[in-house]
Structure formats: structure tokens, C-alpha cells
Image 1 (cartoon, rainbow, N blue to C red):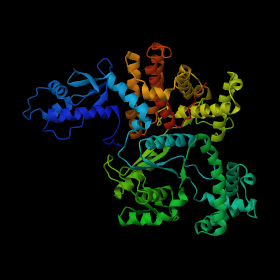
Image 2: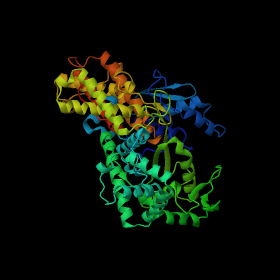
Image 3: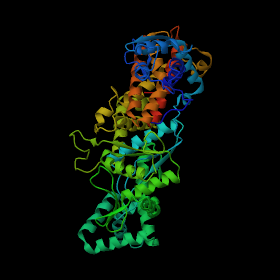
Image 4: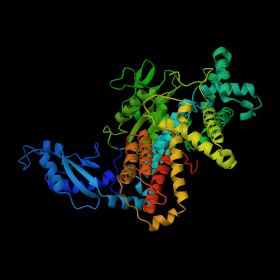
Length: 589
């Protein structure tokens, strides 16, 4: 997908560069053979392997080649490798797999260089320059619920990973701030506040306000008629109606703001109303291409392989999601010049996106070759379930409000810290900060560690457990590493300048190798749009550090300087993982 550029610092990429030289010498008549590099599944064979021999053999046999099978091809690839500081040894396995063992000295120097130059130097550099991540996107006048949690958390992490990879990211909140429901809300607002003086305190619970207006709409034909007329007045731009609409939107925004503040998420709102003026022009462009047809009084785009067409103008002449999404895509491609547009919604909307993307390809807005830019991706995710295996709700069957959920996580965390005697040891501010970092981090990590396409069960006890693959365990593991460094009494910044890192013991080498794989993991998580890949890496890193620490004494050992530098490198990579996952690290427990 998003291929890495030439100056990418990725271990896999560094190895590929060495093999590229060999492949040009080994098969000079085969142009542009890309090295196939993968981590060794069986670590006793090596760290990485080059898997080109078999595919090359199938290309060159029968062409008068000197080779007599894939293994001789592998032997030649190994023989033609240029001298490199990074490779300690090579061996051949099976039908020509070239196994590579990396040099401990080169690994140690690479980690030490990162310690001096910063974790930014390990960022993968993707070939895409500007991306849009469309996520969160709640509906105005409705509370954000647990369903919005996944879109907000996953979207924020994807944006952070792309930003770290030097991509300019436009974070878009495509809120539902337009449509027929606003007539109902505005008319109800006029009834409740005839003088036009409205405040969020006066309205109170916006969700309850929405339900009450819906009740009036469904039960009072006269009110329904006024509400329908209000939609026409709003869309016609009448001042009184625009003002009421703006008030409702602003009250909603304040509610969302509380959630985004707790989650540390930043978005720029460009709601449905923003794209509304672009719809007629967009549809004209599609008509010119002959894509829009009449069907049963509506205007539609037929999509091959789909029984139902994509409706772009309803029978009553009104616009819908598809017309708004097409206008938004046109704007994003032509005005915002985005090369990659990522939509983060539940898997239930998959078919809508498939149809809408196909229509854009038919219009020539997107290439049919999915490896080319500009491109679009729908990042679908499963449901959040309760312990009963059904959609997560309160006992009264209400959808759980997101603010309440996050506050509960923080409250439970704070209680656990107080129980451990931290209220006596820490300031009130430290207690509050740690409860927030761990509580909100636990909620995020419990979501992100799962493959996003699966449903997951929301369970406070599991996510706040300090053992196993949880944010609590990982945050505490980071704090323990910081504590080891503090207890040494050494100035870690001085050690970075003067000290030397050595990966002599096997556990040191294993930890060092895992650290060096960070860049390729971020790249993999980015290109596949799967945050759980990064979570898996982070948990493995913590486990490898535990093995290292139980085998290798740090403070007071002859290798103290080297091992403190390895501790610092681990803490730095963990912090960068936390940052990408939107989790605030803690430094003491």
C-alpha cells in the first residue's frame, strides 16, 4: 500500500538495500527484482531471510540459465552480497532461503544513534504527502455513545501514526449537522424558547430534548407540518432558522468537546452542512459522465454486482448521505488535494462505501488500480458488546454515554491508587493525573489491541487489570523502567553522550533486535490500517524487557552503563508507542 521512500529507517528496508545489490549481480537480465525480505519465523535460522530464490527460479528456468534449481539461485544471492557492517553471517535453508544474522555491534550502534538523534529518526517515511482521516463524526443533538468511542480512538491512532510518518494529516469530523431532523428540533426550540434566548443550561440534556421533539413530530400532524416547513426555511437560508440551527450545533459541540478533551483528541469540524453547497455541482459532473440515471422517481448510480443502486437524489428531490459523501470526496480531492482519504466507521456501512468508491472510480476521480494514488479506504470496526454478548447498554437499555464511561474508568483507577496508599505519597495533582492517564489509557488500549474488524466486550475489570495485555500493565512496566534509571543515580543524558551500548548476552540481543524493528511495525500498522499490530509489538517489547531484566543485573553491574542505555531505549520506544496510541505515559507507580 503506502510504500516507503528511499530514506526510510526500517530494519527490513536496510536489509533489502543490501540484497538489492546482490540481486542485480545474480540475475542481471531480470530488471527491477524487488527483494522479498521477512523476519525469520524460526529464530535459530537467523533474524531475517531473503525469499527471492524460488520466484526467481520460476522466472529464469528454461531461459538458458546456468542455475539448476532454486537452491543454487539462493547460494548465488548469498555469495554476491556486498560487504556490510550490519550482517554477521548468512546461511541457506530449504529451497534457497537466505538467512541473515545481524551484527551485534551494528545493532548496538544503531540503537545508540537513535538515543542521540531522537526517536523521530526511526519514523517510517511513506510515499503519501497528505491524507485525510474522517473519524468520530457524531450527529448533532445526540449524545456521543460507546459506538463513537471506536471511531474516535481508532481514527486518532491512525492519524497519529501517519503524522509520525511525516504525512500531513487533515483530521476531519464529518458531523451530522444537516438534514430533515433539524426542522423538528428548530420548531421545538421556538416552542420552548419563544424569545430566542437559548443556553445549554436551559436546554439541559440535548438527547432528552431530541427525544421530546421527535415525540411531538410523530404525534402532532400540525407540528410535523411546521417542522417540514422549517427545513425549507433553513435550507433557504432564513436568518431566524439559521440562528436556531447554529445554537443547537454549538450546544452539541460543547458536549463533544468534553469527550475529546478527556481523550486528548483533536479534530477539525467539517460537517455535512459544509459540503451542501457543493452537491449540485458534483452531481452535474456525474451527469456529464452519464453516471446518473432515473429510477422509480429517484436519481441513481447503478453499481455492477449490486442489486440496489446508489441513490443520489431522493424522489422528493432531497439529497442524502451518498450525495453529501460524493460532494465531500470531490472537495477533498480537488480543493484539499488529499492523496489518501480514510473513513473510520462501523462495518455496517461497508456496502455504502464500496458503492460510493466504485462510483468515484467510474467517474475517473480515483484510479481503478488500488496501489495508485489518490486512494480511499473504509476502515470498518465491529461492535462494543456488554458481558451478556449483546450491544453494550445501561441496565435501563439506554446507550451508554461516553462521558460517563470515561469518568467511571478514571474513578475506578483513582480508587485503586488510593487503596494502594498513593494518596499519602503523592500530591492531589499527581493522583488526579495518574488516574486520568491510566483510566483513559485502559479504555483506549482495550479497544485498540483487538483487530478492529472484530466485536469486543467492554469490561472494566479486565481493562483495569494490572496483569496481562492491558494498558495498566504496560504503563506500570514503563514506570518501572524509569524507576530503575532513577535509582541508578546516573545522568542518563550524559550516558547517551559518553557511554557505550553492548549487546553481549542473548537476552540483551533479543531486546535490541525488537527495538530495531519498531519502524517497520509502525509502517505495517499504517499501511494495513491496523492499530492492533502496534499494540502487539508494545506488549512483546514489555515481555522482552522483563526477560532481559530477570537475566541481566542493571544497577551495580560491570555492564551498568550499557544496560541503563538499553533501559532508556526501551522506555523511549514505549513512550512513542503510547503517544501513537493516544495514551499518556506515567513515570512512577
